[in-house]
Length: 115
Image (cartoon, rainbow, N blue to C red; front, side, top):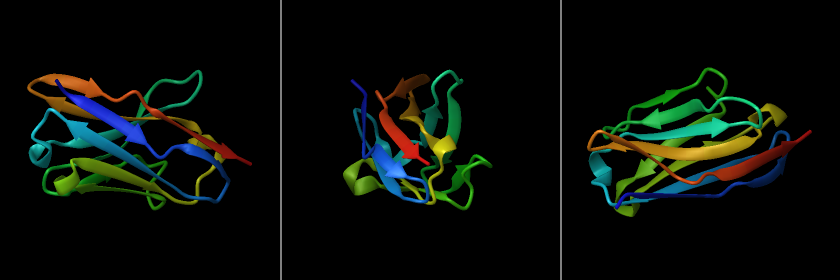
């Protein structure tokens, strides 16, 4: 069974930082592309960043230069370092991967940025 468990969310003031973690189990993590998505209240879920098995990263334009995705294969964990957070970054952040032609999602972690 595949499990993705996010952690690290919380309440932070604008301009602050948070680091999210997502630990995976049930997959060969070292070859999996890992993704971060977010969903703000009343909005559709959107892609934030992803990282390939080789460490290549892609970012949504809205977070480029502020967020950094990384992975530690020894820990089966992907991270999302979020800097200079703004109120519009407030959302539930989800970890996602595709494994054996199926998408798997974590339950999400809430990030709230106060102005």
